Length: 570
Figure 1 (tube, rainbow, N blue to C red):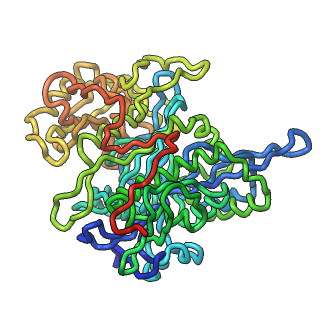
Figure 2 (cartoon, rainbow, N blue to C red):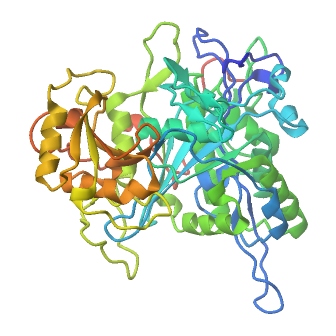
Figure 3 (cartoon, helix red, strand yellow):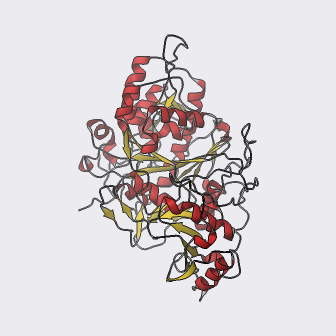
């Protein structure tokens, strides 16, 4: 019987069940839950090497927080070939919809999206000692911290979007490499349960299904990584507006106890900070997310300004601990790949790092008191900005990298759809002539959730339009669908270029081209945005700055300080 994501918080402070500080909301109406603020941990190391007589060592960042922290990159140089064999990997995407990875912009530059996952696994002595909750030892973990890191194509800025652990979503179908199938959910499921549906690849699938943002990599880390990284840099400054003690009368809470003002925390106290729910703001998962943002931006600044990581013996121990605590996708399975990634992240100054929370609303559905759902319009605004590589801080992008030139046929305007040219697999074959491309056209004009009445005969009308453009093998399909926006899906890598040609002929953006196991060939799903006429309704202008509901925090903001929940002061 599969363990529910709702786990009790015992009297033990660490067993409080707050993976990221989980538990009931301030009113006490929500059953206590484990939440895991351990979104990430930084693993960074440094060890300079002489140019002659020694092998040049590599800078590396080996943990979710270090990446989350955003590319401040590690504090020096470190190279450990023997660690390569210790890096744990898992499948990137277990879902059926494959978005094909991030696409180049008009100047040939490619953004990068990394999903950072904090697992509440209690699968070894170290994590059990830190996490408590003995009834969950060796049980299935939860993805209690989920943050999407977006590195802009021109490397001028970075945006991070957190999803609250209490978010309720429809889960996609996920298939494990061994063939085990986890069917799509028939109702709303708490987002942290995605990890139990085959592993981090299902968490990635859930994000892609919700946001339509292609996820290029994931990094997942557990409790002990936080402790190691906070110790490595000598502590992280954090601030509280009043004295705080995260402990309820019945023993729940992270146990964090700090005086008013700024304190430098490390080790287990750093873990307590990241897990604290009771005591911050209104005592919900949202306050915990804001505290995590403060911690990570502060850690980012510390990496920039201190040089304490100079002891090779200590670095070796920390590196080994970080590697053992981390799981990555197969695209990040070597130290040199982590090094290359950290070099890209290092290009962004803290002042262009923006931490946000997905805009949300409390669910009004029966039995979901205290849980949240995405705020439809404003959450989509944030997702769209990430999809279109628009900086969440409203400052725009930098100039193209030296030597960069526009890609053929692409527009240099920010937010302007570029011709569909999906980079989805090993096939580099050009598209076939339109007359040789078979296209199945489905009527999906009702929109997801059946928000509109399906337009009659729409598949036939659009199939005729395609035929007029030379796609003489286009035909209406008797199957229907439900899509808010028009998409072109295909089944195999060999069909990618042909699918891109269909999208380009119709003026659809590259983001509309998706690989999917739900189709057997190239399939055009005419969405709610194309109910009439010869072209989809163009979307409204993209926002230029994150909505206030995203609670943005700039990486240079040293004045951030957590508000304290009444009743948790001393």
